[in-house]
Image (cartoon, rainbow, N blue to C red; front, side, top):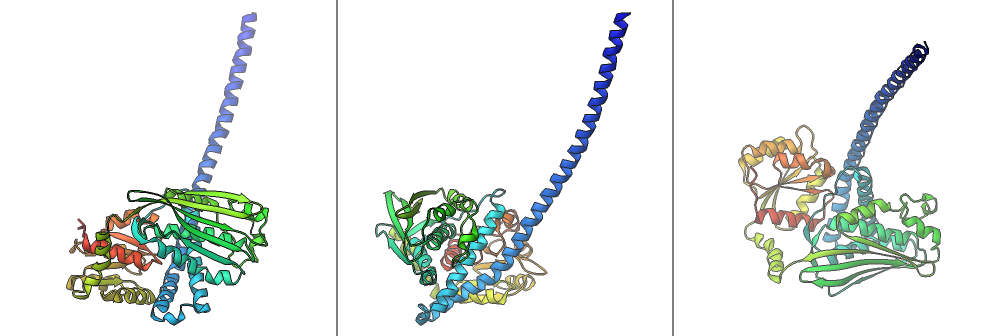
Length: 419
């Protein structure tokens, strides 16, 4: 009899445990469905946020390209305005806004996308000097002195990404200026070592000043700084160390930080650069465009923004290019059918028929002419579309004149046919 009682108790316990298991399992299934739904909604919201930031940055980049382009053209065409305070202010504001837009983009895509790094030939002395010039107005308004030193042993023409380099340096210099008043900021470009055609270069920034404090120095390197102390400053709210470190990693560079409560802060960016192999290569690159005087290269510029067309036309016409400009994709297709061009510069974001669609239609009958995308959209979203459409390369607005010329030169001299 006792066995039946024990068996009954065990059976009852097993039944109870089974019912509890079913109850808990049902609750877990419901929670799982809720979590999946919540996760789906979170991903959707994140994607909407990314898209919104991309659209906003694109809308900002387009007029900024015009402002920066016209500012540079004014400086070139009217050398007497080079030291004009208003022009300096405009140039600085454009450069700083460009860096700010880039920072917003990198925050948006930092964890989900790879940063695209260019490897182009550029003049490192020119890039760093332009950077210093862009801060001239800011130093005048903060009673600081910005000192610049460039090592004479450094080869001027090197390969790398001048845009990302400038972005990192602009942030580092602006921080040094922000947390200094009635002081000095020293920016030096120094050759650490050179082995064959690889140069290890240090970009060192250190600063002192009346208002330098331990708290300020810490805030330079925080993930997101407390903007309270920076509101009064001309240069705004500061860098995000995550962005700067991520950009440095993209260049295989290292940022070294040294703090001293008595002497101020010092930080250095150390990068390996590949120099041009020989003087013959330099001569070849410097004369290729000059030779075009006898036989001008024909360029078709496609952009729905009239100001952008004007800037691109003026830049290339000064370099002896024969420029044709058109403001829509449909007319561009007909022009390519009826004429031969050495290169086509194609805006991506155009109404009715965008640059991707225009390029696809051109590639149906012309697979040879190099087509370079001009885009204000972050290229991490466009890489696949660019390749599939048959575009040979891309350049991000606002672009550096030398970068544009080097890219055009590369594709005209070394055409890669698109199939």
